[in-house]
Length: 250
Image 1 (cartoon, rainbow, N blue to C red):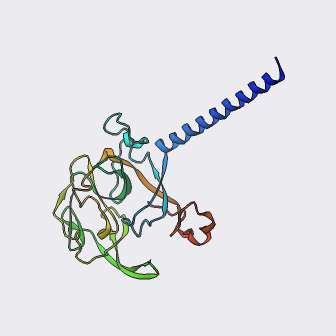
Image 2: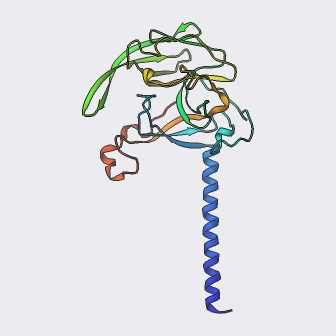
């Protein structure tokens, strides 16, 4: 066998090994993304101030069990969930939008199966009981070189989960609603930025969310950047919100 042939076989063998390593790495990444954790970024202000535009977070895929929406591209491989667990009221969860089963949404779990949910004069009622709402300091938001102050409140659910909500518009469109009775196998989801959130209150756009559509539970922020793309690393010293990195969402 010639030296040229030996070199060619060696090169071919090295190329095959590289392909194997790449395939193995991809399979491991897909497995982690499917079974354990999946990263998401926040593109809108519907969960402000809990979640800000430019936040990056990990979602636990195992928290509520697995469905076809746990897999990339939600392949049509069956209905229902395995190892299913009902979310806790107050959890922040990622789900597939019921109207298209493909768009990722992130909201807070407010209503569980059988619950009756209503907003009256900006106050949240669950099963005819008002959720305590305490006025706290305004949220100061900067936009276009100007700032505005937005009324902010702390809500505390009956299970002890407490979180902040914004009231951008007094007597806004979604501050008074009919009573929503959550069907079995479904959830009622709401954004913390109450007047700037398309959620289960808007039945034609989101409505009740089937538990099958759950992707996972938000766990922790691993990165956050303000007014700059995450890949613009040369701006990180000024654009990264360092204080938000590692913040727990539980």
